[in-house]
Length: 383
Image (tube, rainbow, N blue to C red):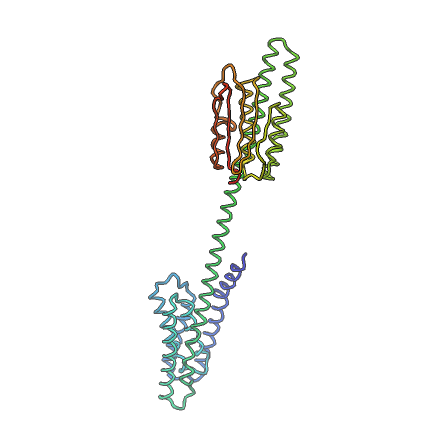
């Protein structure tokens, strides 16, 4: 529970339990005092006491659900009845209700102008009734008229209390909205992170499984031709690719957690494992988030496609750093017959283009002048 919520809880306990209990006790004590002490015009005093009691009990109701006109009538009636009762039973707790009526107007009425008007009505009525009782019964023990004017002052305390409560409610509402917004952002970030991790692992796994499938196909073809030794070598290479794929998946998870991929070293290791020429131009530097991952996955996909669609041809990877961009170019020699590259699985050309576009870059693939194939990915160095 937040600090504001705890304060509101205490306010709720005070409004619903403590204040009703105190006012109920005051009503009982005042009723006993009126019945046992001397009061002026007892029938009128008794009727006013009953009305004040009803108005005091009505102040416990949820006034937010009551129309504004009805609220004003209740507050005004409470103030007038309590003001007239004050000089009629001065030796009891009856004067307290005139002060309570002004405080209730400040707490319950949303309009400060109306609350102050009710408090002024309360004070004026008190002063007038005190003066009238003093004239009618000169020897009576009554308050000075100027002291009766003080009954309207509690409206200021009531307004301050209402303002404080409204401020706490608004602060708690704003805090709840902030918590909901933070939770929503956290869920969205978690979904994006899960999607990113799933896509990276999908790419690594697709690359590894494609290599394994190629080696197993080769082993099967060699086995049917009686070249068992070469078939065994192909199976061993497939196993090696499987082990290497597991390592790459672990490395990808680590890189995703650390959010830092040493691009040149990663591409150099990738090219060395597949006996591919690797070249770097320009000076390396910091890259924006996701740039290094995208280029590594693009290189893996391009090399895998080259091995699949143009087996036995030379492959090369070139990484170029410019002041504002970084470019990856993967080339391979001409094949006897090159089918249309599959862009539906793994990264694929479509996936490359989507990722590059998401980072503000571009990805292109097409025939090279020598009859081979070229894949070029260009990304901004910083997002």
